Image 1 (tube, helix red, strand yellow):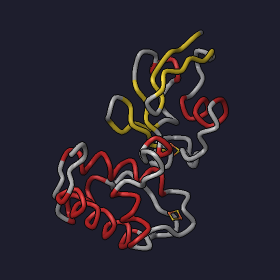
Image 2: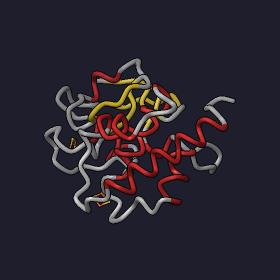
Image 3: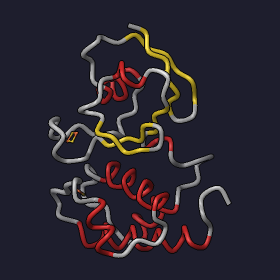
Length: 159
Ligand code: FES
Ligand code: FES
């Protein structure tokens, strides 16, 4: 079946099988390998993307279901080569170890800060509770989200 949707701001179309997963279409058809395949069963958050602005697990989402919708992957966050506040903060806080989980955390952090620009540490930890980091880098990941929230306060998205 043919699926048409917006991917990182551009209209795209692709033929998919009815049971084909979004993560596979993103990685294999569009070469967007920033979205990571880890558990494949909805347990780790590494495959998180934004669907109409809401975080979803692309390993549990059928590609057919994004027809007519908008998907943003980690590759679609930076504009004109300029990192987002969240991406900058992850680098500045040294929050990246092996990096495998990081695209999922970055997407979640973007989503959290759009909803709640000044989260407490407890709110950050609660929001990212579904994302696992096997390098156990949680302390610096939480610091990075906190730092990014200061950037959001200084310059809210779209300002
Ligand atoms: S790969 Fe999707 S939740 Fe783990
Ligand atoms: S940085 Fe290695 S899994 Fe999170």
